[in-house]
Image 1 (cartoon, rainbow, N blue to C red):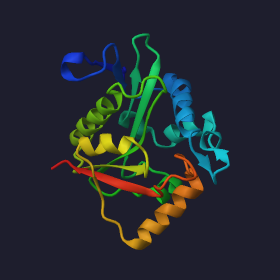
Image 2: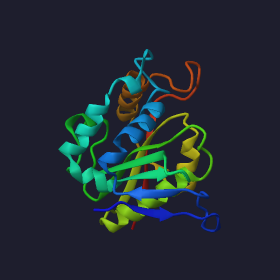
Image 3: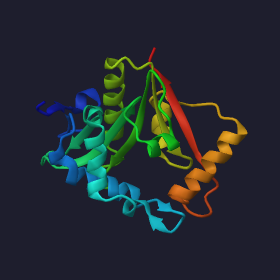
Image 4: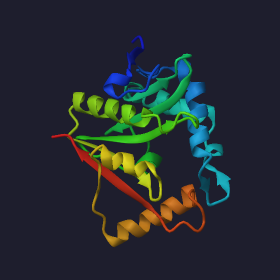
Length: 208
């Protein structure tokens, strides 16, 4: 369908002169890939290789060809000049590759926020909250009973997620150790080698 731009205004807590465009279309692939790459390059696989170098533009586009249903679960934030400044991608059961399920297998009734990224220079403006609001509305419209996401421990965005109503899901010791090893291998130590925070946290917000 034709992308729909939803306007925001300062009066309702939105970001002035910005809007969300959905569904995601192939015309936006290059700009969104650049946003994802900037976000991913702040993390280093095995503490050595920028994560943004682990996936090319062709691989990024291939995910949507394999699972076209993902397009309607993504939104692009546009600045007043019409350029992409942020991106959010959700996924639901049946729309994950085997590799993606290794990180988090989406359950029945769950809408999982796989990626939420904002370009440097546009962070701290309320854009993240607006994209979370869109995710919640979209998840509810699709009958989801829980909205979830994963956050690397030490990420300041965790405070936003908590204010939005997300709470940490309980984990046993084995799960925590597995998560720590996975985060270290894939993302390295994104907040510094001497940061006290390690591992990651699955957070959930009930929608019922």
